[in-house]
Amino acid sequence: MSLLACACACSPGGGAPASSPEGASASEPSPAPSSEKVDLHGEWRRWAETPELREEALERLASLPRFGFGREATAEDIAKIDIDVMPDGTGLPEGRGTVERGRALYKNQCVQCHGSDGRGADYDALAGADATVGTFWPYATTLYDYIYRAMPQAVPGSLPPDDVYSLTAFVLHLNELLPADGILDRESLPKIEMPARDGFVYDDRAGGSELK
Image (tube, rainbow, N blue to C red; front, side, top):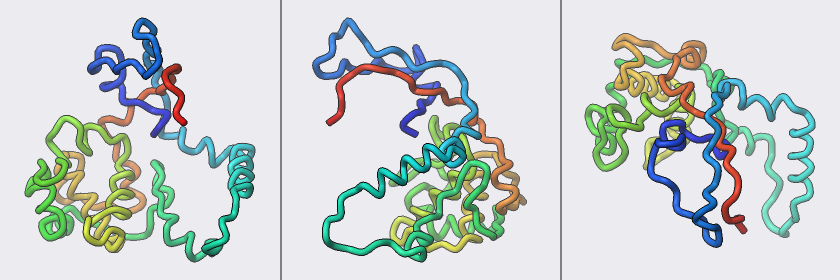
């Protein structure tokens, strides 16, 4: 989310001021991000629904140099990694999970890193802290996406959809966003309203050092 910034962290008074970029005058700080609210729920579709932007991106890809090794990806290769889940549920597979099943899976797969109640152990807390799934993430579908592609740590991407739905359900339950008898599938998951959904604004600051 390079174009976005969290309102609580980046709005005026929401944290320590950033240090001046190298070569920039300390008396000329970068403008603060806009406080204008945006509809992030629909913003992600802008690229997909704009043929001109899509064609421009494809042209840039086609102009990349060839390095004389490897091979072009097949449709099957691409399908294996084309697992993005969008805010409206696009990309979610068929499947079904429950909080009860997720509790058992969490105990076997997740507790050693995230703690028995999701408050954290060797790794980050998933619930109960200042910036966790329930207090910071704007979309519940992102939780499914992340678990599916990155967890469990030792064998990421190995969980079937039913298990991912169940773990997603249990983590949402830990954050008091789903009842103990909750059930998730591709229809119900996108309908969950996350508390932080409207807590982001455009990061339209300018200036600073140019990255090279």
